[in-house]
Image (cartoon, rainbow, N blue to C red; front, side, top):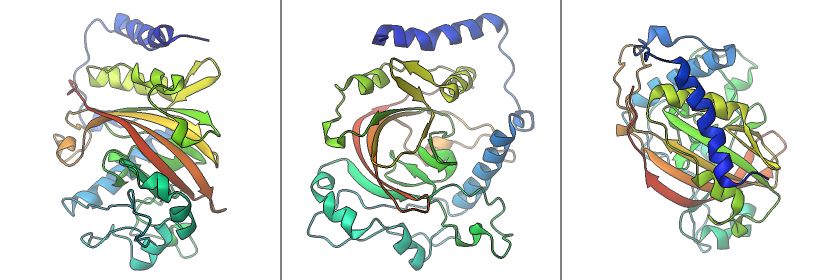
Length: 308
């Protein structure tokens, strides 16, 4: 099995090779020049911008999930009292998103600890323009933001700011100006996982990048995955019921240059741009592809600002 030092080298060698071919740094691309990539990437980018535009229209939509509820308190679901825009779920949707009473009771001891939480996540439907929905389409019942979650904000989030999304039966970490990496730990108790757990400790060795060019190269590397012994470290992993995962998301501070009419939108002003390490467990699949997760934050640090 590779040790931690060898594992770090795996990250640096490809980046070193890439830098060898780039004698002159390319100019910062304009928003129009950034259009490209695979069909999936283009589709994801369109969905991301639509989510962001609707979210930004409300300036800031704070959507809090159940976080460390006391055992004596009744389940409150989600608090959407101040979310009054079109992105806000209805009262009926709030009930659908809320964790079940059984799950809240079963994990009440765990959720009484600090920096823990529980939420449900639904698969991405890729509905496109939410203003045009055909009758009979599954998008008719789509719940805004239900496919994207931010551990840093402890709530649901637009895709660009999310730490985790559920897409095509996979857990994906694909936030803007961020590098996310996950590892599946198997069917082990979430309470047994700490920063000293070997597979989690390897995540802490994951180095920062210094520029958007390095960020892009690192994202490609993580999409392909890195095998260390019997464990795969990747930005995308199959979702499995009753399985425990660890995730580290490094949300860099910097400017988002891909927003077209507002290319200098300071993304981090609305978000908590942190380096966060979380362990989470899928405790329920309701049979429709919707999962309930419990989680615990193990570490949080500040992140550097990267260069464009």
